[in-house]
Length: 468
Image (cartoon, rainbow, N blue to C red; front, side, top):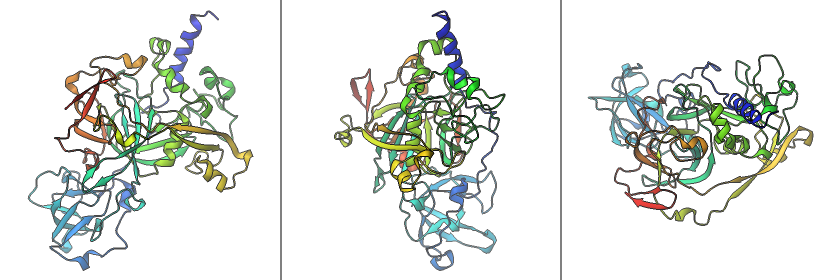
């Protein structure tokens, strides 16, 4: 084949292979339950603490839920939501009446949440307690880790929650590359405040366009170090109408609410391929002759998504932003001794198309999984040192590299900053030209919002730092 035509065809097909996520693939609306806005937390009622009848009026109580809606009247409608309280916010019960049902009237004593002004405030009594919730614990529903995806820089970061006396400085435990949606007016990745609603191993879309990476009823996928073309070859497609094999990779996290069906998932390839199929999206030919990014989903390599699956259970917070990046501590002293950690994994056949066996090597061995059920074993190198990307206004060179502005927005649209070493935001607002999904009643959880007067260092052209 002509040496010029071949890379062009490869680039065009790369766009087909690597752009799996589409709004018309899945139609599974995620409802917002009445009190918490999330079905996972709706079950989070207090069982081991005092009931409302025993703690009485005029007594200060803690919010014992990850998120709890406040309303202007004691009824469930879509028009009376004033905002959302977070775990351990303090309220005082000022009135209870049988006609209120599950609601009680409250006075908000302490909260960093933005609650709209109202003559009266009501919330469900089932999520109030005389004792604090351990934020980050399993009982909180969210777990001890959360994820922030910066669409502007195409970077995923996972943080371990760390708050002392209402001051939060979280510890970053993972930094990894991702691929965002294509900038064509309809496929941009949306931003917002979400939770992981479910995990799926070897996910396959409902339309069947992208057959599972592994399925016991299918032939095996192409081997490690295969070309992009091989994942769309008829020899690995199990039925007519399929486009690409394994486009959702090893694991897929569905998120909600109001996510536009934009999941976070792996990609084609094996662990041994590392980030090969992520880096190809930034190649010259791929961008000249095709649209190699996703249809809005956040895509990362398979080793990364497998490790994220270990850290973030169902119910974990996932926040997507389009932000300039900066440092709380220019020297990143909390990370000075950090070296790249390693995680050993074994990918197994067990639990295909379900949320079953994960890939941690120790867990797989402890389960006694026989080697004939193993697909691949390897070691993942974990980047645990936060590195901010610089921002270049009105530039789309990120198609061929990284510049912190993949959609080429003007500087005027960028409000506030994301402090990557602390996992918090200062004066941040979503750009007006980026679609916002997620919870409509909560901008972000209070533990990621730093005071407006927080001093920070923003990186300019790789090396220079300016203080703000």
